[in-house]
Each structure stands twice: as C-alpha cells, then as structure tokens.
Length: 135
Image 1: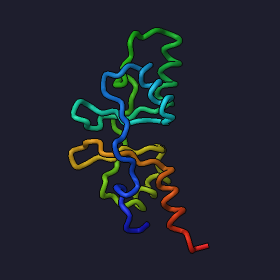
Image 2: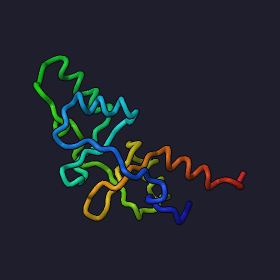
Image 3: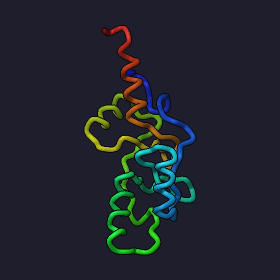
C-alpha cells in the first residue's frame, strides 16, 4: 500500500451535484444513490463545494420553521471542500482520513476538475488487503 496512489483506489466517473441544483433535488440524489455527501461542480466540472446529508438536514430543518423560498446548493454547501489528487499517496490520504471528518473526498486534477471520488471504505479495504499475510 506504501506506493499505491489515489488513482488506484478511486471511483472513476464520479457523481456530482451541479451548481444551481435545488435542495430537494440534492436530497433526492443523496438518498437515491445512498451517498452521505457529494462534490458540487460548476459548468466546467471544477469542484466548487461539497454537500452532505447533514447540510441538507440542517437546511430542511431551518426552512421548516421559516420558508426561505427556493434554495439552491450554493446556499448551504461547504465552499472549501477537502480534495485529494490522483497522484497523492494512498497512505497519506488514509492519515488525513483519520484526522478529518469527511467520509468522501473529491479527487481532482491540477486544475481542480473532478476526476473521481475516494471513500473511507475504499481506503479501509485497501489497507485490510495490504495486511494479508501479516496475521
């Protein structure tokens, strides 16, 4: 696992939420695909944010007390998401995952374009597999 990069573990052709997507559509996408969060991308597929179930829940709860009209993802997303690069060391990213909260990391190229998604589950499986023969 020492030499393994994010590229070897990431899910290619990632799902993402486009800017301008309404709150209810974001919730539908998260529930339908069973994601806890997804990156938010602009028209060039550049990562501009990240939205989680918790963000949606918070906004839905607040809006249930006072109507704010149509809400789009930019109104409640995190606008400085943690991202990783394809060539990053999988071990370094695993160490990041121990200290940081997100369970899903957008994978970006040098221009910030979304190229994949990396989950804690993928890293956990790779680490477990790398221990084969150690027990």
